[in-house]
Length: 149
Image 1 (spheres, rainbow, N blue to C red):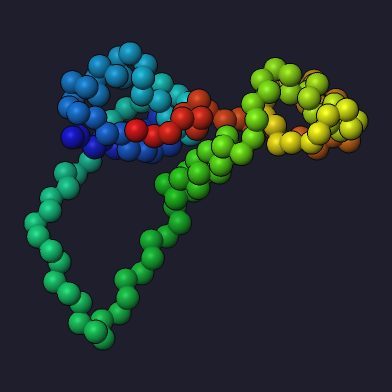
Image 2 (image 1 turned 180 degrees about the vertical axis):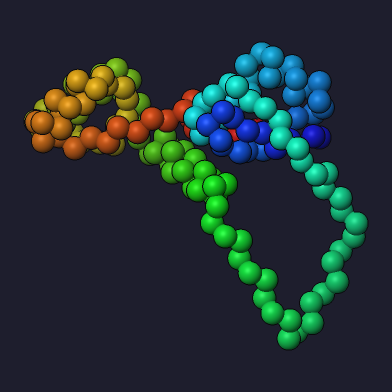
């Protein structure tokens, strides 16, 4: 198993697990590798160090200071965003291009309210907001809609 550090043009960093270098190149060439945050297929490998397991670490003495928590950086923020996107995907119904119509029907009491997501144009979104219908434009990349393998 080969674990690669990957990057997209948007500056997002993520890991990819592949059976071999040939497997990575094959998937990359077939546009099967994409950034889980923005969906870009323009992926490049970053330099990465191999993980060497040289045995168990010795136990720390009881009076040793606790290690400091890592600073919240880009990777942590990206991971949090991806978790949030997946939660939205799991807890909402995709109504696709009918989003504006479904949102209006719920707002007017024609159908029962439920959590929905879908697509609408900028014009439709602005009209919904002007009508007092709360919507949140949130672009979700295709990768957020699938479980990671």
